[in-house]
Length: 176
Image (cartoon, rainbow, N blue to C red; front, side, top):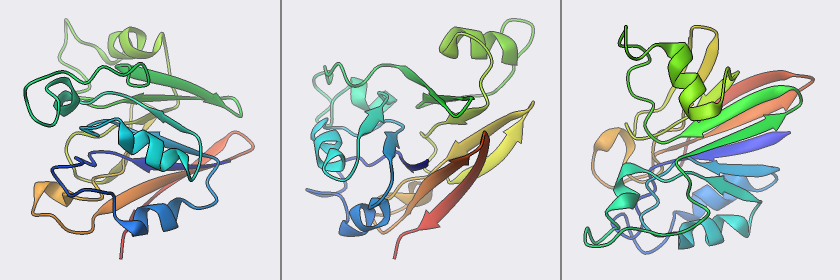
């Protein structure tokens, strides 16, 4: 299974539409996961023309792109949990600091957001692409296709998860 990863699209603040390069890169994926800060839910409809989409709400989605009303869409829960080929994949917009004992431990965070241990967490918020492992969990942030590294509007990054026989291979792709 091939999953496309995207976050922090910020439409329409980043423009009226997503870059065409996003759609081109996602052609052929089995699923697209959007890790929040869409600003307008129509982004999910556009991506769904390429592949099925699941998403989570981001902190910018609560205020609405105009900053005056919340986005209310049942497709945008706080978290998502997906099981693929024996792997538990969680998605959330802001992962935050993994641990701040004694109140916030990694185990408590995983239990709170995903009902227990996960193998992979897809997240966004920082606009900085990242693939790393923390306490046995693969963490993947695809960055932002529109405002990479929180800089000016330009082509940024998206990500992919290739899953085969219970193994996951993450990548990040610079759009060009």
